[in-house]
Amino acid sequence: MALFMEEKKWRFWDQSLSSRKRSALESFAADDTLCELVGSQKSAPTVRTWVHDDTVVLGIQDHRLPHIDKAMAVLEDNGYQGIVRNSGGLAVVLDSGVLNISVVLSEKEGAIDIPQGYNMMVELVEALFPQAKIDAYEIGGSYCPGSYDLSIGGKKFAGISQRRIRRGIAVQVYLCIEGSGAGRAEVIREFYEAGKQGEETKFSYPEIQPEVMASLSELLGRDITVPEVVLDLLALLGSPPPKPLQEEEFELYSFYLKRVLERNEKMLERTLE
Image (cartoon, rainbow, N blue to C red; front, side, top):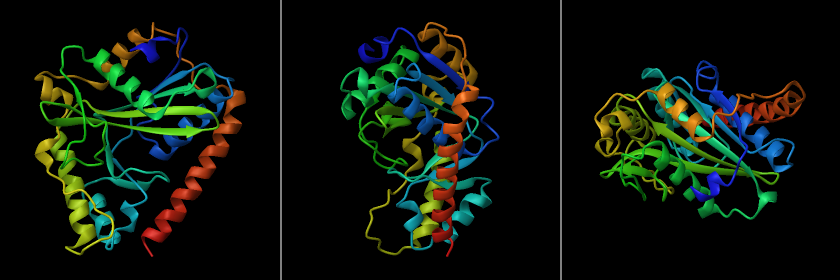
């Protein structure tokens, strides 16, 4: 964990409980806020944990499905709220058994290229689960496939993304800790099936195979909980005291939250036209 462990002092913001009932859009605004704060060195490098109940986060290409109205109805029928992020990637499932970790660093502290950012997160996840042999390569048939899918024995349990704003770098991972990975993937399989209705599309959407996805509890053969992993992460950081946003930082957060809400609203309007 060379890059990760270079940092001696971390800011830690645990929202694994407080964020659950809130919109995932708030988390995207929080990470954008941290990018600016850390990028300008007004904040120490930060690790944030977050969990959101029953949400499917869609990418820009997802909302261009030819029958997106039917696809969104599938999410609603399965008890999920659909939101659209203004960035790359494809549909991802969030629920109470999925832990998200954001690591926010400053580019001013040294050039961190995109592969370095991904590799840092891979090393962090390996440190959290030292008993597991974790591979990083694209898992075909998974949702939101990418070169840094994390898997054990060919079954994906995590995906990594990056966002860079104002000299700040947020490297984010979703970890399917509890529950059924295949069950989550089945929802996304139905989503794409309803959204395409068998039509040819310019964009190549993934053909979901639920059996290639699993949770860490399933893969490691023992019950693992989100709170347990948060505590393990805190220990890796050297147990820094929790430090959420401070009063003087909320104005910046309000700016990013307004922006992300307006963008999501506009994209949803286009989606349901």
